[in-house]
Length: 464
Figure 1 (cartoon, rainbow, N blue to C red):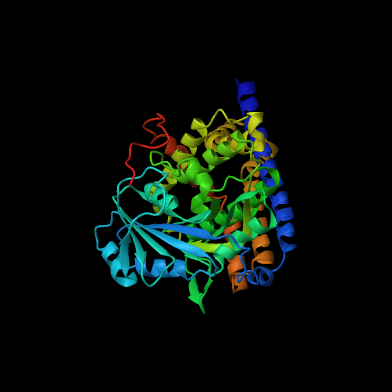
Figure 2: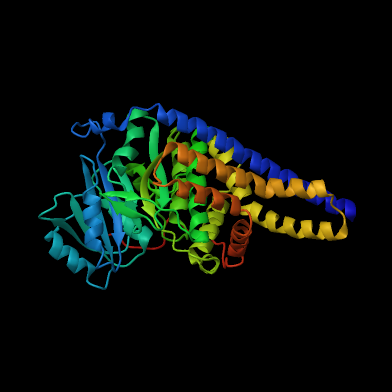
């Protein structure tokens, strides 16, 4: 029995050493990617292109639901983005508080006939409206169908080849579209581009520019470090190893024709963005298209993390939904995993998501139980205990610290050194409490799964 126990604990140690080593490899690749980004032409070169036809036109798609007080400000912010040719498609998803009436009055909307083919099924569209004062604004009024359904209506109505889905809680940088479009000019094999989405907690707008401030609350502060780690080392590292898994909710620019070809977002899944990007990669690979999906280190938008305490995090439904959604997507596309026909996506990316996000939380919690049991029973040596903790917690701590250092060296967005010091402290503190809490929430998500039945491409809906 003792031999079986030590063998299992050794197996867990090897698993976490392998997982941590791969994440360290991602960090090294991310550093190379950051260096290559520094070699690109400066922003003044690309701003010089604003008056030319080189930059691809973009359809910015957004949805609104019962946002009467904020919707006008959101529309104007999207229209004011620094870009030569872009339109804003705002979808009113069945609002009942007068949101649509506010849009009609403010922007002098008039009803028009759709001058396009509706290619993605959605809940019934009640009307399409053009603005008399803003020629780049199209408003769609439709029955309530949820975020994915609303974005599908907007993607179907967009007139430009490139599409960007804008979430409701996003604060865009003025030059966000310019930065997202840059890789398309430099590399014709790029099919989608995502950028860094940062924490807006405690920040403020100064002279039209958002100035971040690191929160003094523990959970938002650690979430900021976690977000930086995901974008600055994990996503950038994937640029070098395999095609990135770009999620639309993370601010991504896509070729709209591809999204239309796969019928947009599914409305019968919990995480439509995660599902969409895997289906898109599968669609392109099946057609022999070697498409690159990149993440750039540029900060293009900000969002606020609402969890201010451990209790808030534990009660956050979104945490459970994201984990359940990822599991369902990976399970539904399990035939891709370890399938050499899908290249690095099947052989590296999806196995990593299985190991790092699905299996690892279970093994981590199991390992803590085994560690305590082994210490009490005297079955584990002190050197093994320290090696195990270093493999489980030390790798992530070092990666977080390096992420903060890279942030300080490259982006220079924080005005005070105290913010960087605070981020470093959060990086050092994350493995002690928050890390274990996060693992438990990931495991807990599986106990809330009621069914693993998979539906078709879309739930039954009607077109416009």
